[in-house]
Amino acid sequence: IPNEVLRPRPPLVDPRESMIVVLAGSKGKSTTRENPKMGIQNSRVTPAAITTSPGTEVVITNKDGTLHILEALDKKSTFPTGKSLSSGQSLAHKFKATGIHRFRCAEAPHVIGTIFVSSGAQAVRVSAGGQFRFANAPEGKFELKVLYLGKWIHRQNITIKGRTTVDINLSGATLAQD
Image (cartoon, rainbow, N blue to C red; front, side, top):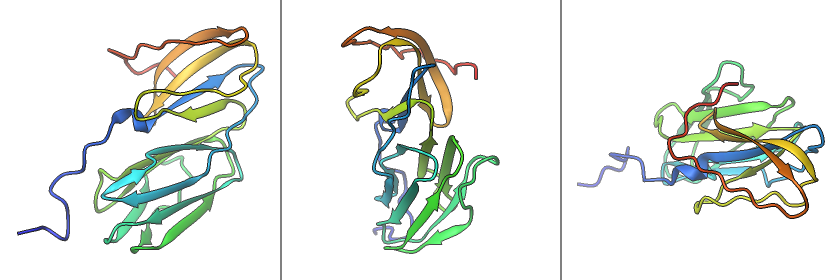
């Protein structure tokens, strides 16, 4: 008998889809201009993580056939808690300050999304294949940071000279100190 109310388990998701890589440094200018739209479909948020700039409107649309009640996961977040989204409804919100804003569905807590708001660093999402790219990164010394599920899991100092490729090994990564 199919369960039309709640799926017995969340669909498998590549954890890299929830990662954001940040290039922070004195010369880093924000070029974070991603399309700030997220959807809830098949009991998951897609994309699972986005980057945006302060003052940009983020839109989250419920594409599932079930109600989702969204709530902030962090007390400091300005994410609007308690907003109910029926199928087809959207929530639009402008994040005025920089920071990490995580949310979930109160009824299905595995439905989690991350919004990274930055004005002083370049930030990009990691693809399902584990790839990321900073377009037109300036030369200089920077700190490369990896954000996963609201926590910094990796920090690495890098120097960019011309076209630079940096390999990052996250095997055995532990939480980096803030």
